[in-house]
Image 1 (cartoon, rainbow, N blue to C red):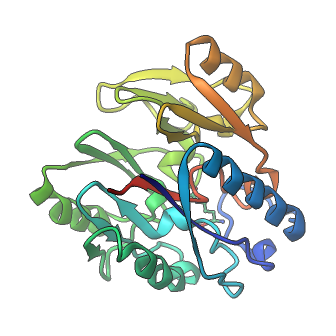
Image 2 (spheres, rainbow, N blue to C red):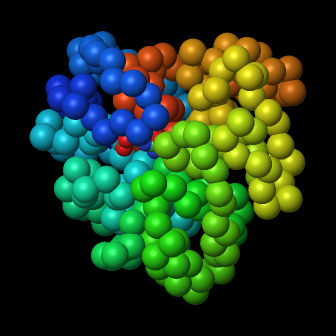
Image 3 (cartoon, rainbow, N blue to C red):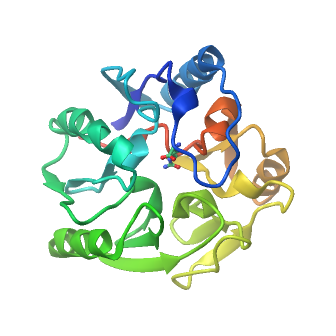
Amino acid sequence: MKIAITRDVSPRIGECELSYLEREPIDAAKAAAQHAAYERRLEELGCRLVRIEPAPEHPDGVFVEDAAVVLGEVAVITRPGAPSRRGETASVARALVPFRPLMLIEEPGTLDGGDVVHVGRRLYVGRSARTNDEGIAQLRQLVAPFGYDVVPVRFEGCLHLKSAATAVDDETILMNRQWVEPFGGLSTIEIDPAEPSAANVLRIGDTLVCAASNPRTRLMLEQRGYRVVTVDVTEMEKAEGGVTCCCLSFRSE
Ligand code: CIR
């Protein structure tokens, strides 16, 4: 069964962390409606939703992806790079208990789930303002016994590695080459240059969930034979979030 962990949008999302965008007003009610539509989309794609308790005190709490890295065998609870976000992980950890044994990134390590691109037995991890060398080293040690390699990746110009590159199948990365160079010897597809944030796509089974704000990249993916659905996440995009960061999706028996 496919599981998707989500959390409601905080009414304080307008106070979110920002790193490369100018702050602009975020309509929290519209963000909540977009998030509800996103959750419905995940259900249509066969996911069972596990909705964590709301955390209105955490402006970025909707971005649950950053709190954990969920693998087939285990879930690694992160230590987010932004101190304001560290209080988000305990509730995500509780939600994961029924599904996976948990392991923890510890101080002084920092790691945001949005920096981890998982392809087969390899985790490509962005070295970023949020994820430090110690966090990457801890992740490597934690997952090595399960047969995963951890490969650091440099990038610049955006918040997380997954803003710049995500896997669209088991050997292909959709990427924005303004922000990251090809890595891992994987095949690459470049996003339409008019849509810089389009590389952030969520893979659910054989379907790609794309942000509606990136129609050219969507069309290109469809022309290459990918099945694509869209969701409107404009309010989350103002908070530097995209389609992957609003859920933790994984399989459970
Ligand atoms: C932050 O700066 O942490 C949030 N405003 C956005 C987090 C987006 N998360 C993600 O792409 N995985």
